[in-house]
Image (cartoon, rainbow, N blue to C red; front, side, top):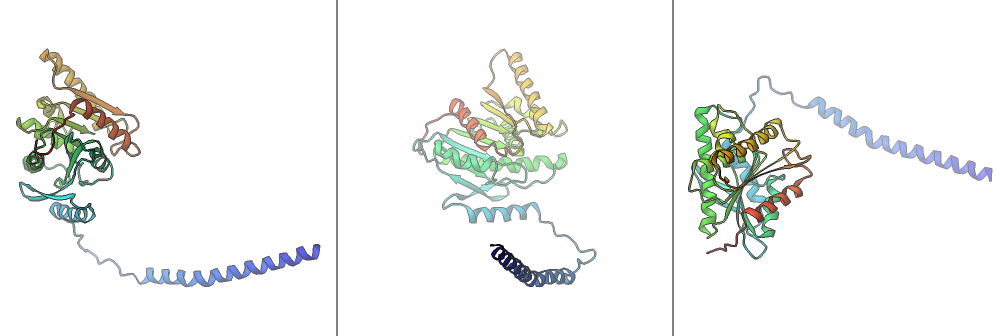
Length: 305
């Protein structure tokens, strides 16, 4: 018995040695090749200029990618102030239309952004809502005041075009759902246009940008909003969002007391633990918005109605 165990031990040692030798034969050429490639890699030219795409080029590139990846018939072309732009349209799948949803993404995101925008774009049609997510211009950093109006007007023209897309289909019950900077743009547009055709507004993670940019300051724009709106954000968002939320709530309360009457229905919802992108909270976000839509924006208008 001891002899058998001794022989088995010898066989195991021999096999391990062969395996180790094989690994060396495989690994050494790869290591030498990697080292040679690193040594022979071309050095970066001193003073070489870094090519930075313009905002227009960035938008054209991302729009082209979205068109290629979109399902058949979803990618549409809309007319804006400075030319055509991309929209992703998805018809309702429930069989009874509730209306149209226009989605506005956050700063430097896109019309099919995987957080916030895409879940809403795909799931709301299952409950009777047509959705249209539009590509907003790439802005970059907040520009000086003299250029701010031009950028806001350009984005507003796209929102107006999206509204016209739905009204052209006979859909009159239109709600705007906007995230981050998109929420700021939506509040600006609705506050400056009385006949906008929008019946409800959902502002997700809205932040203030200071009194030096009045069109970006929700404490000014929200006072002029005349439709029901939902103010929704996560408790783990930035201070600009969470502190602004408390200020907005107090603003609505003051407005109610001063007027002596009830302003348009306003509700503020905080999602515990959610950050700016609502990571791991997408379904909660969709449910909260669906509930608000059922209560404040439910419609039954059909195409051609």
